[in-house]
Length: 337
Length: 180
Image (cartoon, rainbow over all chains, first blue to last red):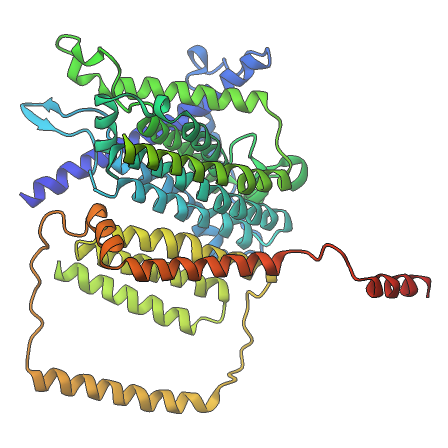
């Protein structure tokens, strides 16, 4: 019995990991192609049809690159930092439901790795851990640009985490549960939370961009000021791990946003399609995530980077009070209605 | 479960000792994080996921990150090698012997083996339960904690606030210094 449970969790976990790593490879291609279109270019289109083999080519290039460790670096932490960065981004989606219960080979299977009653807290715990990798990479490189990048990102992520945490409370209040499965179910029964609380959704989206260091908040790696920020000294596969963590985090926050505010795997009438209806959950999820990813790339190609002191002032003086206010309003409304 | 517990116990004690022994303050902070994470897993085994994840969010995710931040900003990565508290070591050894003797006597005297605990009932330690008990039975301590935290926040703001108007005397002194 317990072996069966472990086995099930294992293959589901592997499925999520494969989804994320494959998603990472093709998100890079997606971003480069879309960005190129925004800048009236073609983008990578040589390797395979539509450049579909470009990520494979990039992976081979990075594997065969020489790996350097600076002689004054703290060697243990220098090697550990990329790993510490990747792991939180890979495990954060364990509590997200990707679809309703489906009939797989005559057995009903739930489409999530784990349904814990503290799902949202799990997400905030994992995101708060993900600061370490970047900070340690910056420090252990023993390079002033890298250290500056690490410090900047630490300050930025801690500051925006607070507003993000308050935005997480809004869906919890609306659904009356911390479990993401319950939150998605409640949105299906009433309506998507983005229509109930658009303010909190916007704040959450902004803080998530800052949390994963995406433009216009890509301060930790501002090329003009810091060469490449915390990963200046990294090369080869170690650099690839940072790159991977960054893109996987972008996918992860998109999925989390979709789950919390865009109704998760539900879409009106899709589950009433005959035969394939119950299996459409992951497809709907993927479509919504793609929309979010497109918006994120769109923002990157449109907005310039914000100055560092303005970024901090924006986080503390505008987003934090607004997030508090939205929690207060939601709580009052939930209590009265 | 017992195997998991003993592995975790070893890791928890090992990281705690390493934290005390290491001379690098960055490594000490990292061992502390590992220790917090291990203790969180212990809470998880005891059927308290809320406490476990709060522990990780608050201690590992925020408090130690701030420690690291301060260590890096101040450049205090390496502690000086010398021992400044020599006589305390003897006292510590004496107290450790007393403590373990006390513990041993208690264990033998009571002659009770540690019994295994049954799994807590469904819904025990759920966020809703904890919230309810915090705001009814323990409402007073919660309020006190809130006030103490508020005082700390106000104090931090007051300390970090720059002096807006330098006094007239100071301005004059600066001017005189510049003119020589």
